[in-house]
Length: 409
Image 1 (tube, rainbow, N blue to C red):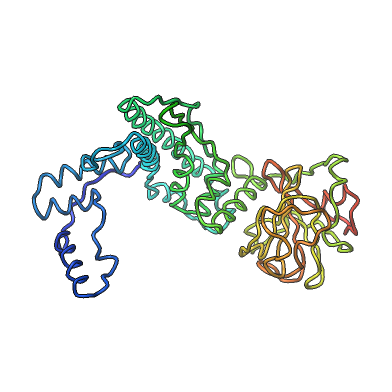
Image 2 (image 1 turned 120 degrees about the vertical axis):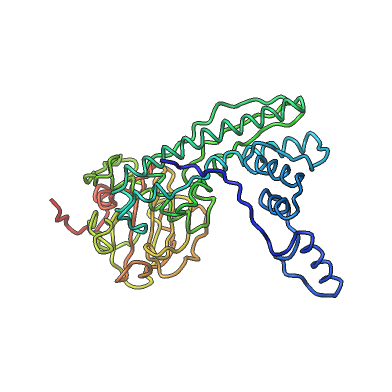
């Protein structure tokens, strides 16, 4: 299977020459008109230089286009038209080229791979698990691309630093890898653009300066750091997807059995009822969304706008809105557990992100936003290893109630 885009040099004929376009802009300005931004002269690229060569037959343009291709792929940190650079500029440009080398290696062609995903529903978590083997293949190809890009990045950095006689040290080696669940979650949020966010996270970083030497750091980003290269919505989509896949599916994509987690007595003392007096029931693994996903939390019925209290001390990680949870607040407690509060009446103004909250502090009001048909609070608990845990078990062990008797076998 071919995953890497083949480099093709395609000649395009334009209706107007670049010089003519520039002249028309000057004429427009002289006449007191504001030119359209698309008419403004652009920085040269391999494509534009090839166009100019095709139109004017200039060998210089063709040679420079070939040089720009190598520049855009990260092989070169500069071009023959750049002029003299300082050592500082060379260091900056070399690391930019290293980033382009990683990005070029991760420019994957998804067309053949995506043919394997039929039938496939890109908005349904179950579809990703059903294609766990295919996402394992993609994860392997992405990992291989990262390694190839890292080698190319190291080559350009070593060459440039030797040229300016500045020491370059390597702090370990690239070991950034994705598993099929991480790959599937990123694909869920970003589609074919997932490799762009991976490339951004995998680009080499640096420490030091030209006087004491520069240290090359290969990043080992968290999943959240990778996904945060996109929009806020994409970050949350990727987070929710990964936690769900980690919880519900085994390594081979089969549905995992229900697990019951036992908390320490000391930890149970740190938890309180988020809706005092509300009956807590066990809705774990109940089917949702026309049997396309499983329920991974506890629902507590309550009247509209009933105050929601933080079950623990903690720090507010995220506040926002998504189609399934509606208005939500996510709080991480001192032990590393995340508490998810969904379907709030509005995007809360009771707390803000990064704020430290105390157990019992109001964090929102009960609503019915998102995928909800009645006023209630959905409580989710996520473990430090990023799996949903059944809050019903937590509240039962902590002696928090009232509790609806568990009817599951």
